[in-house]
Amino acid sequence: MKHEQVKFNAEFSVLSGNESSQAAVMVLGPGESTGGPDNRHAGSDQWLYVASGDGAALVEGMEIELHAGSLVLIGRGEAHEISNTGHAPLETINFYVPPAY
Image (cartoon, rainbow, N blue to C red):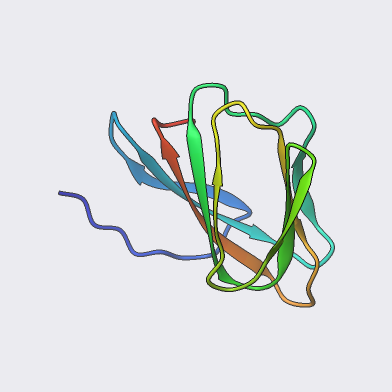
């Protein structure tokens, strides 16, 4: 068993994981984005959960609005970009299966 306290104090930080999965937090300030057409996790699925803030996910050319409570599955190999479209930090918890980092 592992137990972690989630703290949104870094742009991107791996919280914990094992050989099968991994958890990380990501914080984007207003107007910031990460990823793009070359951002892919060839060997891992990524679940992105929005804890707070507003943003957009561009996954394989399809845009999805993000709000607190949003949950998005980004399949292995899918190009993606995450952007903060709001006025407050966009805080996400991300799960990678298997680990990507």
